[in-house]
Length: 185
Figure 1 (cartoon, helix red, strand yellow):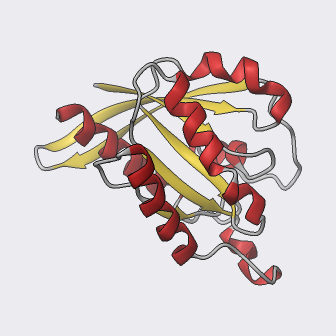
Figure 2 (cartoon, helix red, strand yellow; figure 1 turned 180 degrees about the vertical axis):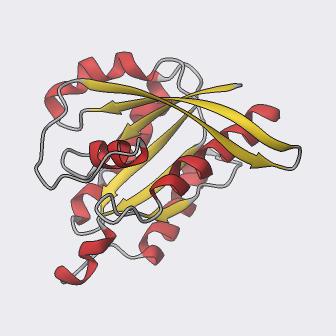
């Protein structure tokens, strides 16, 4: 069984906890409850590989996004294999802030550059704002960070909705494949 410690990162109120809860099979709740420090969950699953099914045990660390938790958050990155970087497509500032989250992950993990998957959450609300973050914005950003950090692996982007469940399972599966490929090298 492959053990994968993954961190859910991003600004407060982008939907990290809702994505994790949905992935764990729980129902979506529209009420906002701020994560204090960090929250932890485990999920066992299987991914399809060229060698057949592989068992994966995710240790999912949901890290508080508010600045007041910066010093506490650093402790939870140690030993991470990858990160799900979440922003709210209706809040451009949460997209702009991804750079600081990537820097924090890479600086504190003890592993340096590692697989990440970028998630544009709340896609169900795209039509309710005038200037949502677009897939083209994200692809340009991915090219920028790949150059900045000399990332030599694919950085996937998925649009998700914790409310509808869109791409929630696929987010974790995609990251698992990227981590597995990275570890094989």
